[in-house]
Image (cartoon, rainbow, N blue to C red; front, side):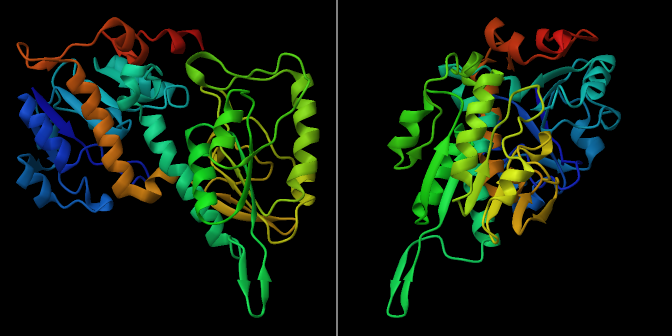
Length: 374
């Protein structure tokens, strides 16, 4: 069983899908590991560290030659995978809805593509969940990005020259990223409030010491879908939410939006009129900007100014903390493969529950129900 760790080819991607730590663990399972030269350079991992862990380090052709499992952060270009074993697994974040043509090419090439972001949100799969591990650090980084753009301090400071007021930070969307954003903004001394469409998050918000901002007395607003993800809300709820947010957002210095719905464009949370109501010098960080954005006027890859308010739209926020996010992502992949490792076959054998959820292609065809239904 040969496992290949590939160098990422996507523009701006600094993460890597394997670390010396996980290389050692895969070798201990009985696999051999090949790493493409330079794969870890942007995540502060030298080729020598992989070699010391027991991996062979070489060019892409040597890394792919006969490989049974190909590990990536983002889905590799199907045309770049020549030399891999017939039916090789591609294990990565594959963006199945956004990169459907690439998925079709994996099927045509005979690869078995496994989309890690389709991992079901069940207890035994928590340690395999790339969305949670990467979103956690994205929420942290969003607050730091906001602090970098905000030309005032976050905490209240009492000085001989007078008092500096604490920044008011509002987090919209309280999933993994939102909860970490709340915690980080609180650590920096901000006054934090938060909202979400899922009523169950109110207790989580308050447990972190933040104020929960929720629409009350609107029937049928529970927005939790399968697996704990948010769902699309009713028009009645959207109107009530917009009214509540409009009055609250005008008083905020920092707003961080994190709302995503799998397989759908990001929901619009903040309008141009709401931006105009904020004080000049305020900052909005849109973590959903690559899926269409929660904020009207946000631009992927740019920091733009509208009505005196900075709107931060960095691409690929997890990649901005590449060393830590790579370590977590790599452990997610190891936890996944090792959980299904069959010692007799010296290979992973997936079960129905997780295998069917994440398998996109098999036997030359697209087989995933979520993709076929879209």
